[in-house]
Length: 243
Image (spheres, helix red, strand yellow):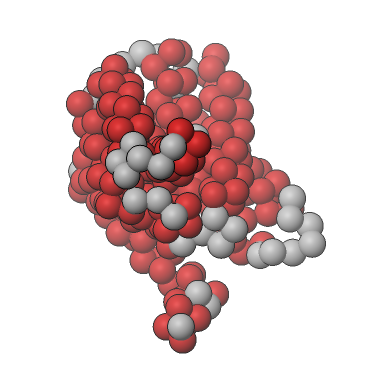
């Protein structure tokens, strides 16, 4: 119990965040696929933490999240959709083990999906971007890092909206700055839409992660801002620019 209190202290959390930021940064510089592989490992940790909260099968949650996340390395969205469909089917079949009635099976299946789906989808989107669009992946990483750091540093103040607001402002500033350096992977005609998609999806991702865990564990915190933003960026770039 004392160990959990130490790990939960603000200083340790800041050091842990810095460690993962450096680790992810190095992997992204070396190879985008290495970044995605590391992200998949963390996503599996998040699935395990969510399964612990939802009282679901932790091993199955991790395996299904890993399957969906790794499907992104195929660089084909169709494969990811098939993997998600297969994981949903597997969740239903697993819930039937130890048959306890329709209601109990439905609850078990819902809990299982709630554990693996957010982490798996985030991992799959990062894997897809690592195969198709490294610049967008790098921009997504830095943008989410700025947003997450800002909201965390603001702390649980009474004005809870202030953290996301400042984080959004920082993210927008970063996107427009990278545009001036010609590093944004979209044409000027789509810049405003891209910035809007990024900021809205990051905020939604953060809210979803907060909903899933009032005090998100280390793994869920690392991927929290990617839950919706990763796939949103992938779909936007694919629709506007193409791969």
